[in-house]
Length: 239
Length: 295
Image (cartoon, rainbow over all chains, first blue to last red; front, side, top):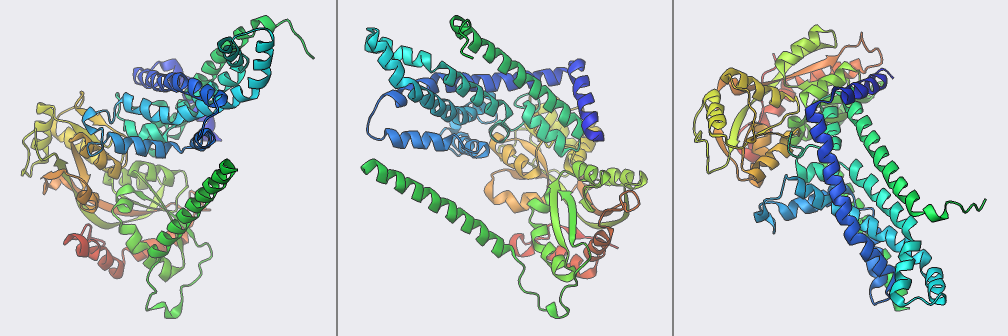
């Protein structure tokens, strides 16, 4: 109890202290996870939509693989990227290991299946109805597809928030490929691991609180975005 | 229909993969089990509280020492040892909060403080090993072959060659800081990488980055086959690394398994165990990884 109370206190003090090292760590956390989310979204939403709408041989298998990879353990993703980027690995000469870029790559490996899989689900649940309606209203195929995606946006936004939650809280992959180097690749989650390892439990809790606040703010922003996209419907009250 | 069968096949393969990994893990555990003891005649006694938590440094775990000697303790006394391998700093803070029963650590100054503050009792010397500075064969700082740690790190910092620091307040990290202090250098800059990791991970990173690092001999010898870094500086008295065993204070934490901690201490400083420690590593590396020195 004592430690927890102390941790909350220390967390607030940490935020107020505006410790430059901590600010740098926080910014790097944001930079890595938001970049990974952006790439995951740019690749995952089209991929998910395509898989939901286009029927082709092997589609079910690809979907199943993506669903399985949604549960990919972060350390495993980290290990794979580590081995590929290692000096002994196939892409060793790129010299990316222990850089923020390597961390983004590993996180995309975690984020992409989540965004693709959940987007596919969301689009699939909308496709028939939305397509029928659109066609009935005289839409072309392209317009119809766009309207399906529009109808599925709730699910797609949910996919993005889920992915962001996974990425910003993830420690296994960024620890392995980033290396937790102070001032270069140390992020909030690896800081928590390190502080705990050093026995600084309350400082670890304090950094945890910063992480939670950050996640909260980002979620608020995304929800705001979601609300805005439903502005037209805000007058409709079903219940 | 074809698709349906594909599904079945996929699920079947997945289940098989899971089963196989379970068997593989079970197999490993069986291998680690101690060979049946010849003296099992009197049968191990069953202690009242057989759970004993040992907080120790990563080096005793990463080198494989504990895997070799702990089965002997468990067979002789009937205790089950839960090993928590962390840096010496974290191990001692676990002792301070009563989360461990007995500590096996190497950070002499901090150990004395720990005892003085009343967190622990019954400290004994157990063994020592030494540190060495390792680095890439190219040796950009030009320190290879020396035996003066202070001169070596001075050259590393002057040539701004990549150096990796444990950076986790472990015994090794504190040793490294004491060498920097002795050299009168405050290490900082792009070349100085504080990685906040255990010894095994730091070794791996140093190898990837082709940098210098300070490493304990046990971890170095146990892993050197995997990596390309070479010994640069060794044999300096400053690189000496004594391990101590400490029981967590039973007065501070009456719930602690003090009986078990005492049994562990008596066992680890006994002549037989000391001989086991001296033997460890000889068959594999041709030299002892730890030199016993309990009195």
